[in-house]
Amino acid sequence: MSPIAGNLGRLPRRAVAAAVALALITGGCVSPAFRQSVGQFGTLTKAAAADQSQRLGTIVANEQERIRAERAAGHVDLRLDPACSDAVTADPASPAARCGLVSADGQPLEEPLAVDHVLALGTALTGYADSLIALAADPSQDRQTFATSVSGLGTALGKLDGAVRQVADAPAGHDQARIGAVAAVIGEAGGLYFAYRRAHVLKRIVAEADPVVQEAVDLLAGVQGRIGLYDRARLFARVQAAQARATQLAHNGASAADLRAAQNQLYDQLATFNRYGADIASFRAIGEAHHKLALAARRGASPAELAAAIEAIIHLAGTIHTSVETLEGHGGSR
Amino acid sequence: MAVNINGLAAWTQTKETLSENLHSTLELLASAPYSDDPASPYARAQAEQSRLLDAMQRHAVAGIRQIDEAIAASGIVGEIDTLSKEAKAEADALKNAAKTIDGITQAVNLVAGVVTKFAALPFI
Image 1: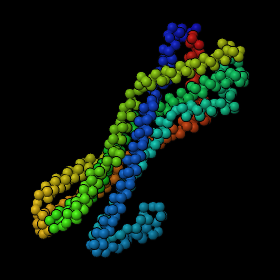
Image 2: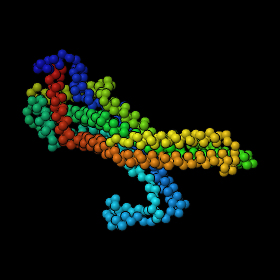
Image 3: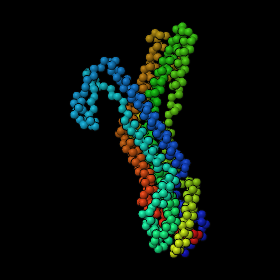
Image 4: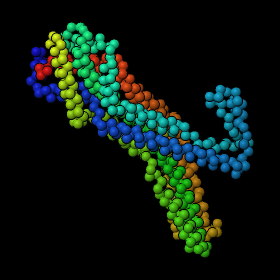
């Protein structure tokens, strides 16, 4: 018996399994709670980005209508920009292919609102959230897929056989029972490997991405605030109009029924104004959620995660024990 | 990747000034005697309120444009795209590795070491 084995032999089996668990899994545990939090981050991010995209679309359309209405009201004489000559001959995909308008009096025309980069940032953040969700997927799917692959490894039996011979000091051969026994170990250990790998990378990416994510949500939260100002100013204008109408009727001899109808309009517009924003997922809340994920990722495995890892290794040890028994039972040298 | 924070702070300052002006206007409107004379304090305050609300919408649009330009100048979209691609590549690799011999070989290498450790333990 080797000195190492002798020392380990004096420890309880569970303590040995714990030591192996720490070596293999500690850096990469992912609890269901962590995985669930990643999912929540993803869901909130996608909802907030989609909502913002829709609201920005409305604002862009409103602004275009306002600009065009003001041009018509001001009798602005619109002419074609001389640079349109380049646009006619340019590659349709190039920026030079855009033709614009100028005012005949030489005054600059107001540019319509463009939000391409805000939308691109929302899309990028959504893509990041989707990738995290894929990476945080339940590793039992990996295990099942891997186990299926192992069981179908007819042509790769030679490599498995080599691993078995190396460990069990057994002669070369194609003993199906022996290969099957070790395949069971490989299936389970391979599953643990993929769980470890998936968890390790997920935590690393979340921790590294947090500063960038915080900056992104700051910018998008700023946009959210500006959209809020725009929307609430428009809604308040309707409240103001309803209040002005109700006050006018209160002073101009209107019937109680007519005044009541006007005041109902005021109540309704005020309620709509006060309801605004209740259903919007906040980018600031999303940023806080990601920061908590990053802190959890940097903290390392929790006691619950370590316990789960130890159980997995003990189960693996049991599988190995069974496999070695099979090896010994088939004329191995051990 | 720094964003022009001073520009954003100036936007906020102007927003707060608009808000203070609206507050003053609403205070006057809360008790001003009603009159449909355009020159009356009530009618003028209503007009000012409309002007302020219109200015707030313009200011909001200017603020959105400001952030859109800041995002364009910062490169942050590219940074997030890179992180996203890295996470996706790893997720795809794990998904595919579970089905390929390379993934299995990696697992075999790992488990061969584990099996060796356990095989050396006296309780097996």
